[in-house]
Length: 316
Length: 77
Image (tube, rainbow over all chains, first blue to last red; front, side):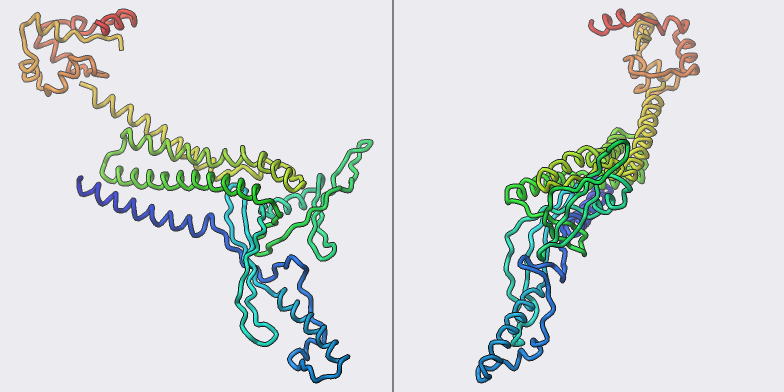
């Protein structure tokens, strides 16, 4: 192996490792820490004024005071229990997000002892970016999601519009779906069964591997193209194919979300019974399309250059 | 490409070798081989002029146009 080739390979491998690290750490793994996560049993409630005497609880007190303080202690206990640090761990790609919640009691208990014990909540969630909800709230007509709280839980319902005698009228809907919201991650999470969770997880992983694999190979192609040009080999079959790969990767990266978003939203509708209006402008990634066009033009230029060079080489 | 180079025919008629021709017209043997084998995409007028001068022939004796069918038959032989 020639020396420049060896150096090029070392540079490529180093860059691949860096890109891989970047992807693994930041692109697909989402760890949302949310201190105001709602516990499944209720909401954070302020303790009653008696909680101030919690540390003076003593069995030598008169019975009625003891009972009262014991109730306060129970309230405070609940209060402490509810001040939990919820850590949502999950992955998301291509509009599919899968999450599990791990609630950790990380605050001190009422006796001042540190209680860092955590317990795993095995409930599975499908996550949907709140971007879609915001888009629909901004829309002047059409279905609008309505968020409300009932019996200490978050609910979402939709009001649909119907046309009566040429005028749009609101038709109250129908399905009220409980959800959890991560303000930090801006993700609305719906409880799903383990099977749905596993299917989502597999779909998301397959897409993530394909996309990250394509991204990695595009980076490698671009590095090799730069090194090849630096060595003076401009119009070669390899360089042409590298540019073709980059163009196809970027085109498919723009096209695939456009194709899979409608079925994914239909699938979400099937699971959550919440209808997301399909707005294709949400799915189109103009940056990827423009990049694909630029790489396609470069590919055509290199293709023509290669033809001219071959003609020149075979001119006697 | 249905343009056939009859350089080998002319060389045989003149009883000349490709190496001798290459030395006379100052073109590398490799390039002349490309021309003789029909892999060449183009030929310069200056090269054609030199070949015609050394082989004492007309350009039409070196280059010949064939229809696609005739060319395919020739290639299959």
